[in-house]
Amino acid sequence: MNPQESVAKPRSRRPIRVLIAKPGLDGHDRGAKVVARALRDAGMEVIYAGLRQTPEDIVEAALEEDVDIIGLSILSGAHMVLLPQVVSLLKKRKAHRIRVFAGGIIPDEDAGRLRRIGIRAIFGPGTSLESIVSTARKIAGSRA
Amino acid sequence: MNPPPSGGNRPRKASGPGARLSPTARAIRAGDRRVLARLISDVEAREPATRSILEELYPYTGRIPVIGISGPLGVGKSSLVNLLIQHLRGRGKKVGVIAVDPTSPFSGGAVLGDRIRIQRPAEDTGVFLRSMASRGHSGGVSQSTREVIRLLEAFGMDVVLVETVGSGQVDVEIHEIASTRVVVLVPHLGDDVQTMKAGLFEIADVFAVNKADLPGADEAAHHLMELIRTAPAGEKWHPRIVKTSAQIPLGIPELWEVVEAHESYLREGVPGEQARQRRLRQELRDLVTGRFAGELEDAMDRDPALDRLFQKVAEGTLDPYRAADRVYESLRKR
Ligand SMILES: Nc1nc2c(ncn2[C@@H]2O[C@H](COP(=O)(O)OP(=O)(O)O)[C@@H](O)[C@H]2O)c(=O)[nH]1
Ligand SMILES: [Mg+2]
Image (cartoon, rainbow over the protein chains, first blue to last red):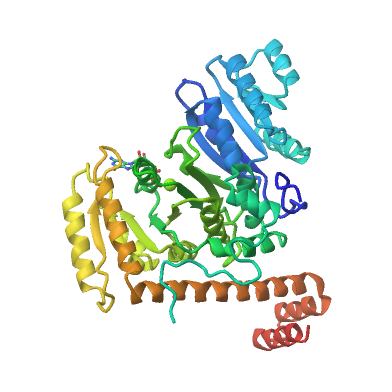
């Protein structure tokens, strides 16, 4: 058996695990907490890592916690720096399995570029919790 | 002859240290963090394939201190864990941390928030922190916790800290797995009675009165002292009280000193060996009851005859005692 692979294939009995973090320097995390609770209420295990995480912190935590998804909340406008850093660190660590979604105020043209580098979903301020939950499920389901 | 209390789990002939290990077990021994992270998930999911790896790694375990940190929500357990990690790292110790939070009984999901308070350099490989949800099934989380502790030890950690919220039976069960049990309280905690009811109080080796930067810490420590004094004697170890503040910070080296004093008390002789044997016996019981419970669940899922028995109880045509007899008989015949 290849030790890098899961010990056993069927992952059915395990809840989807999501790391929610807020990179960057801006202050409050109400939105991120609301999303965390919605995912919990949908039966997921949400590791809430809190504010001011660096991309390195986030990726190490995601690997340690063996999550399926990283959800990042960004309001500071630094999304075009921080999100690509997370994606490239995941690539560097050969963690292609881990999907990333982002929430925050992200202009359309940026959103397009972020999708192209591998951010799976981008949620603007008006996105309903139901749609975040169902997208998270879909993203996790597509995990290789 | 008794093995020395801290002598670890003795190897069996077939798979002792030196025997050829499977690639996964070897990766754990070599300190591969990714393999450890995946294996913990598999252990948590109770994947049958983890069994042989746990067996292989068992001889490398049972030697290190396992420190339970429990107490009501918000008393500062994670903040103390954070400082204990720093303290231990400063002394060159590698630290495994398991932070258990309750699974919501309604959704089966959980928000695991202990990482917020536990910050460390991302590049420090001398720490491995894992958040675990209690995941409903009785006995299951205790067994997963024991196994994750073993994985962390086989991986090379010198100490494992286990944080649990101190409410409810499950938390007491997890806390009991530890070799030294620290219960964290704060001044003016109106519901410390609640904590006692939950059974945590009786099994504490060390009390940390945290938030000692706030008024009332001395009174709380005195009050605690009175309670301990009236507790049934007989055990040689008298629970110790340490005032701490994760805010200032204050009392962290002292807290660890007392924990170490308890660990060396355990190493010195009979009580430690008795405690070790008690824990192993409890684990064996959990493993066996876990298998029976699993069989029962399987049978209930698959066997329509059992389902009909439940129907009859629901309709009132059969009493639950006789129904239980029949379920029990049918399981024994398998
Ligand atoms: N004043 C004060 N606050 C503390 C202390 N330790 C923790 N806290 C605060 O108490 C809250 C809960 O802390 P946390 O470590 O998450 O508690 P836990 O739920 O027991 O793990 C946080 O806001 C901490 O900043 C302390 O020693 N003094
Ligand atoms: Mg905590």
